[in-house]
Length: 255
Image (cartoon, rainbow, N blue to C red; front, side, top):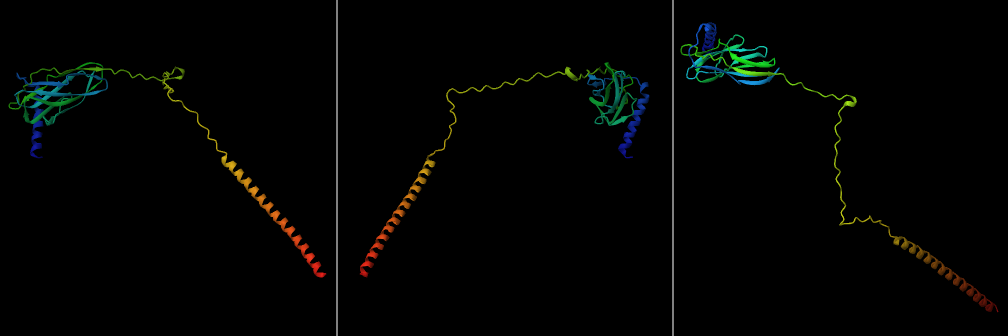
């Protein structure tokens, strides 16, 4: 065991010894006080809340604080209490409803000693006070310098309001009012007239042109046929004349 642990063990042993002989020690006319923060509040049944135990020794340097709490168990339940190790690093066993905290470095002025956690269990007004077995010891001579003021805090425990749930059954179901949506009015403009869509009619000119071309082709064909006929006719007539002439020549020659 190192020196620090030995010191803490010795200090804890001293705290236990002081707690045992404390009832026989008379309170000096000290000015050191004990207080609770917050000093009041309203809490619903079933909820928990924390209360800070503080001491104020003024100019007196103190190294041990024993804070025993008194409260109505019908309203509150003490679920935990522990020392503020930032100021009082040694936590000695308490009596179940309190705590004894010590330090190797004596403190002056106002200090947070411990934190007590309560659970609200019953409706009503619940006061928390300091029992007469509480003490604040001065470090120089181990004299109890607590002023003996047992006032603490007063808290209200309330019953939470019941949660009402609405269930709709059959025709008794509440129907939400219809939502009316305004339809925007479209106002026709009088400055411009909307013209009717134009019907596009395909021009018949190309068709007529095609008819003219066909007619021209037919006429040309007929013309060519007529010319050919005329040529053949004339050739036929010329052939007859030549034949006749040849016959005449043949007759003359025979004579």
